[in-house]
Amino acid sequence: MCGIVAYIGPRDAAPILLEGLQRLEYRGYDSAGVAVAAKGGLKVRKSKGRVAELAALVPARFAGKAGIGHTRWATHGVPSDVNSHPHLDGAERIAVVHNGIIENADELRAKLQAEGCVFQSETDTEVLSHLIAGLATEGVELEDAVRAALKRVVGTYGIAVIDADQPDRIVVARNGSPIVLGIGEKEMFAASDVAALVRYTRQVVHLDDGELATVRADGFNTFTQEDARATAKQPSIVDWEEASYDTAGHAHFLVKEIHEQPTSVERTLSGRIDERFNTAHLGGLNMDAREARAFRRVKILGCGSAYYSGELGAQLIEELARIPAHAEPASEFRYRNPVIEADTLYIAVSQSGETYDTLAAVQEVKRKGGKVLGVVNTVGSAIARECDGGMYLHAGPEISVASTKAFTSTAIAFALIALHLGRVHDLSPADGRRICAGLKAIPGQIREILDQEKVIADLAAKYAGHEGMMFIGRVRGYPVAREGAQKLKEVSYVHAEAYPASELKHGPLALIGPELPTVAIVPDDELRDKNLTALGEIRARSGPVLMVGHTAPDPKLAEDCILVPRNEPELDPILLGIPLQLFAYYAAVALERDVDKPRNLAKSVTVE
Ligand code: F6R
View (tube, rainbow, N blue to C red):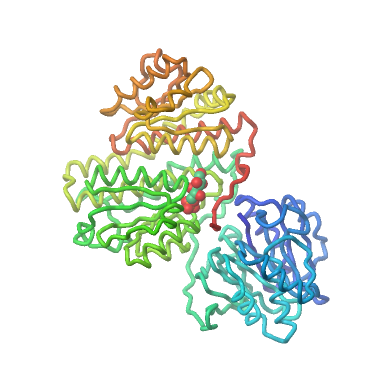
């Protein structure tokens, strides 16, 4: 998804902007551009393609102490040099970079054209440059011009604006698309993602929706879009390591992050296991035991892999706390006028904390008076700020578009929440102790699975040639199958479908044959025999089977097998998912896919 970087201070902006844009490359983009405010006016370079191509266009002498940069992911108009941001007005006084979508752009464009504005691009963003310039040339201060222009706009945005005639400031604004300010020593930064800032500063301020900021070299002030009322902001400190933004010798971020999981899980668990009372210590939930007991239901909301991790979470909560729990895609929930119940606990899941559908679902619950907790990785993100409490994953920044370590840490977070809710209900101390011990064993067991990398890579190469794959699992194994199928299709573009193993005979068995392999999740639980029966049905139709489980079955039932260490049955799904991440990664490698930049996908989906 698009990225924004802005700088103002004593240094030349361009190298800082280009470096920041490189840090945002992981989000997915098709073109890039920069504009700096220099003595003689604005200097602009933009191009379709990679940031490296843009950097080659920027001359060594490109002086300007204030500037904005952008990576674009096309929505209005094809990827091209001219459609790349920044966008300027006709007099080249104002430059704008924009993330999000302006829904009434066509209508505004027609009006502006009728007034004589000549448009260069097909983008929705360009209307903003003309609107702001129209006011600025009448002598309106830049921040007032931006505010007035935004009043005419319907849609979502994160924007940064510079004015050749007022080069002492950059104005930024947020509505549905993140903007974070970075505070330096006599210099200031702004970006859509802290990844672009961590090299320069750790002190950040997150803008809220409906907020603008004027950013100058010596500081910033924030105010509301509605009535220009000053707002008070408290800076927070980003504790993510700069090293997380490098592949550190790995071929791709995806495989690096798969390998980080023993330590990212340790961080998620750190300080949260309470062995005295065999429970989880989760102060951030902001709930005492009485309140935690009062909930009759749990509803988990997230999108994509966050939703699948929520399905694992719902099962954990039902099993350990015996509270009815259910996960639903936030993207559906928000559009169906959901009934919000006072005795339901809502939990929003998001790695980025900025997914627009999930944020909108949280806002819908809150508007109707519901209580929402967040299970979020990115500290200070919009969803985290919107929730009434929750847990941070502390998994570290996830750069790979395909989520792995955040998925696993979310499942761990749900195990902790389930343990906590279980222990205020009827989970016995002995069962609590069993789950605590199981959780503590997980990092080591993930290491054992990662040690099988070579075997899994060979299997992935063997199966990658097929046009499609079926993933099946039953009850605890079903969300694992769904996430396994999701990973495979995202990074290898191999068609993958997930089904409950119990549903095979109700339809999808018709697909099974030698050309469609099945990945079957078969833990050693009470459903193993039923799962093996399903494998028999697949083999009877000559369907190849790769089984992921604890004990190798009769070779007649599965020609290949990946075995994982056994934990507690409730926690086993967390481990069963790990080989499927490696499987998807190596299938993509075998098919020579661009693993860290999968086609059509962006890291965080901040539009509807
Ligand atoms: C899958 C993936 C996506 C995200 C989804 C939600 O690998 O990355 O399905 O899980 O877009 O993103 P977050 O968790 O940032 O809300």
